[in-house]
Image 1: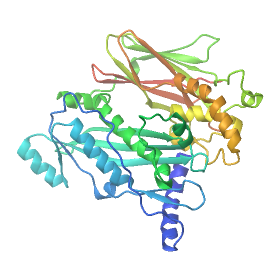
Image 2: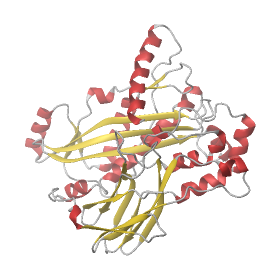
Image 3: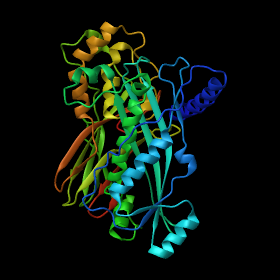
Image 4: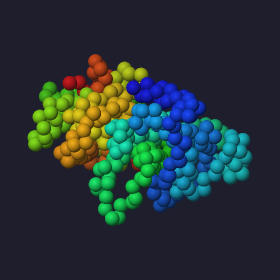
Length: 426
């Protein structure tokens, strides 16, 4: 589904160009007003660093089609990414420098000592206006791939960050107070609000990665970056009891991770029989991390994958997406295989009346909040503590089993533990 969406995006880009040439209903490229979501660092990273934003990165445009009716809206995704990352670098590093070539980096290294080069690419973008109407809800997810290399070209770290954005015009207007920031004004601004939020969220993830990615933690400390991955042979695995569907994986002296199949949340009893009868095409797994050490252990759903024999591994759905899939089923929403926002169908509410949609907003709000609250979020387990939550994957047709991969990071020792267990079966 993910690959298919990207091929469709490429075809959409070609269609956009053709539409412009023929004088169709395509909008002029739109700039996104973004600000870095990374807080100013209490102690900026003092190590010398340079960054390189290629022209192809800065000028990347991303067409979206909010209504599936031939109306194409090209987003200046590269322009916004370039601007917001520069702002983030200034908050994160003591003295970031821009270079335009490898030769310029070498000259800078000779003058200032060892210099690391940071280079981003936009590796994926997904967008959905779930209702195909201007009120949304809208979902967007942007994915950046970063490479940090030494002045000699040797790799220091390569990692991915994601940003998720959601916008529901009616819900936000209803929740507004006199102190709320002004809402987006105009059709284009409403359609691009979710992508704008996704870019801003990605900047916070990027800044946080210098405290979460083992190689970056060590580079920041001036330590060798080799040897960050703990040998997988240290993992021991045992099955849970006969009444439970799952496994217990342990790294002695570090942690134990329980992975067990979880039921899909049922609607409250006071909701309609239609809601109670609906069953989403999802796989739910509860993960429980028990920290057996005195170190801080990070567990981020973005570092979890289900290898089920598909073209690409499946990643957990964002909490808001999972909640939408589960609670909107009375309106005929069906999940399709994919990753993140790509797992949402192209259409789920176009045939729903305004009255039905309003009923959903009121009756299902508490249920949606409860589903989101139970979903595993990025977080840290202190020494001796426990963290637990549910991750949701789209269910692949006629496929079960496979391997669940969960990465746990020891923040104090800058070590990465990779847990591999069989996906708990039904």
